[in-house]
Length: 152
Image (cartoon, rainbow, N blue to C red; front, side):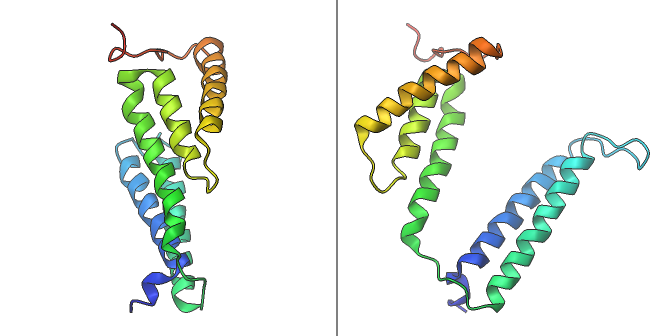
């Protein structure tokens, strides 16, 4: 039984199915409509349902085959990327675009095996400048460069 939970495809399929279930549940907050007049929640529900089916299929295939074993060390980059996204979402409203994007890029850079802080900060500065130019000034998104938590 423990051998089953060490297979990479089982975990990947379970993650896809869980993500699909989450989005499927969120899609029910929107009207589904009818077959003739499809509502806003119908397409996300269909895509989420397909994701659940694919995830279950991948997990079953991984359980039945002799697939590649899960290497727990390889989970560190995955965890850092997820942490970076969560940090960005948490920091953007209070700290602003500059701080949130900088933290996002540096945490994502830490996922690389040959992480160098100087390179990460240079990349962060470039991504901040490009992102601000495109999203804030170019598209006019209502995002503050410096959030209320950092303005004195």
